[in-house]
Amino acid sequence: MSDLATALDGASFDGLVKVEELHAQGMITLRGDFGDPGFVTAVTGVAEVSMPGQRGAIVDGRRGLLWMSPDELLLLCTYAEAPILAAKLDAALAGQHCLVANVSDARACFTLNGAYTREVLAKLAPVDMSRDSFGPGEVRRTRLAQVAAAFWLTSDDGAQIVCFRSVAEYVFNLLKAASAPGSEVDFL
Amino acid sequence: MLILECPYCGVKAEETELHAGGEAHIKRFGPGSSDDDFETYLFQRENPMGVHFERWRHVNGCGKWFHAARSTTTLEVFGTYSARTFEPPQEIKDKITARLPGWSWRDLS
Image 1 (cartoon, rainbow over the protein chains, first blue to last red):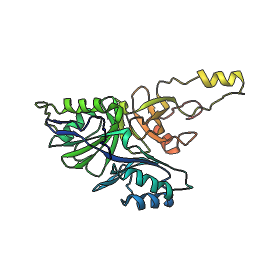
Image 2 (image 1 turned 90 degrees about the vertical axis):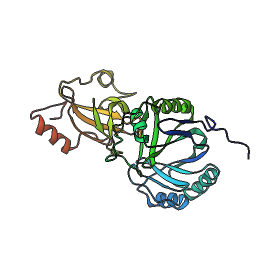
Image 3 (image 1 turned 30 degrees about the vertical axis):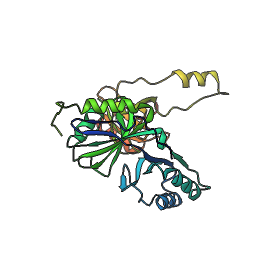
Image 4 (image 1 turned 120 degrees about the horizontal axis):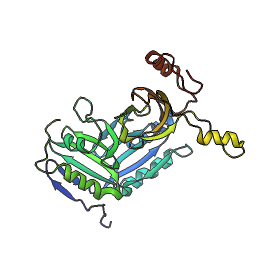
C-alpha cells in the first residue's frame, strides 16, 4: 500500500501537553434510527463495541463508537479496516433507512497527552472541563475557537480530537498556541 | 450570555455554540397562498419585550433544531423543547405562568 498522506503528515508539538496528529484513524459515520433494534444490532455486531448512550464514547482498543447526535454515530477503527467495515455495515443494514460513510480521509485527528489536557481544551472550547462535569467515556461535539470539532478524553490526562481535514492546520496551530509553555492557568 | 440546554443531546450549550433561527411556531405560506398570507408569513414577526419563543440550532454540536422559551428583557430561559411540536408544551407554559402571571405571546397565554 502506498504511504498515506494525512493532513499534516503527523505533525507534533511538545508544550504544556504533547499535541500529535494521528497518522491514520479509520472513521465511519453512521446515521439511523437508534430506536430500531435492527439498526443497533447490526452496528454493534459489526463494530464489536456496545451501543453508547447519550453523548457516550465507548472506545475499546482500536474500535470505538461515539454518540454524535440522536441519530448519528461515529465508528472508530483502524484506517485499513474502515472500507471493510463499511462494506460489512452496508450489507448488514441493507434495506434499512440509514447512512454508512467512510470519512477517514475527510477528517483529521489529534491526540493531546499531558497533565494540562483539560486546560488546553478549556481555553479553546465553551465547555466546562472540570472533572465533575466531563470525564472519560463522554464525547463532546463543540467548537475549537472558530471551527467545529469533537473530542473525548482517552484517560484522565489524554484526549483525542476530530475535526474536518480542511481545518487541520488551523486546529493544530490553535492547539500549539493553547499549549505554549508558560501559558498555564492552573485553574482546572 | 445565553445558555440553552439542547433537548436532543442534553448539552448546556453556550450562545456561541448555537445559531439563532428566528421566531418559533410560524406557519409557512408558500406558492399558491394569498398575497396577504404570504406577506404576514414573511414580514409580520413578533418583537416582544418579555416572553418570546424562538428556534435555535445546536450548530456546533449535534446539529439539531430545537425551540426555546425565554424572556427578551431579562434573558431568563423558561425552557427548551423539541422542534417537533406546533406549540409550546403545557409544562413550559406553566413555568412561564409561575414566573410571569398574565403573560401573552401571539394567541398563547
